Amino acid sequence: MKYDPLYLAYLIYFNRDRDYFECHEVLEELWLAQGREPLYKGLLQVAVGMFHFRRGNFKGSSKMLVSAVDKLEAYGDECLGINLGRLRREIQQLSEKLAGPVPPAYADLTIEIIDDELLRAVETASSEIRPNEPIQIHPQRGEKHALREKRMLDK
Image 1 (tube, rainbow, N blue to C red):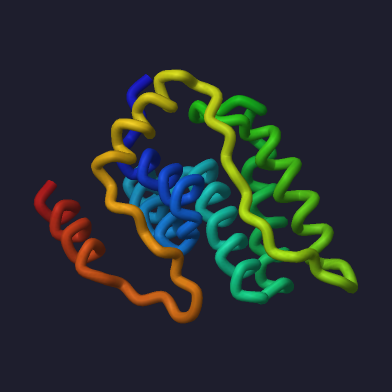
Image 2: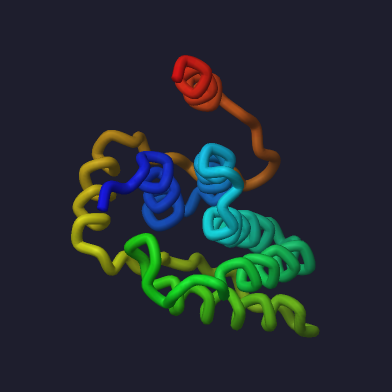
């Protein structure tokens, strides 16, 4: 199976850089290009939920992660080369803790890649994507977004 470069970038930004804002940006492009596929929307919401969690917006994070679980439930435990079942369980547990009286300490999640072809593609693409520092305060679009938008218009 050939994986879309935007999906590869999503996994790189999620697992390597922990840049959840950038994850949202690249997967939103893929989600729109794929006719608003709910699977991509759910994965996009996981990144948004993690972004809110890091910034201390526990209510917003929990709400986004609950929505992600709802969207991702329609898919098998192994989907798009990742362990989607494990991811669903982890975000479900996290959303419950975030909704509780004492929010948990912040910790990153890792999306487990279970397809060898996807793992190789991510490793190859990783060498081509410059590491990002996660946005901690206020997100801003940068030069790379303008370039990506230009590529989309040129298609």
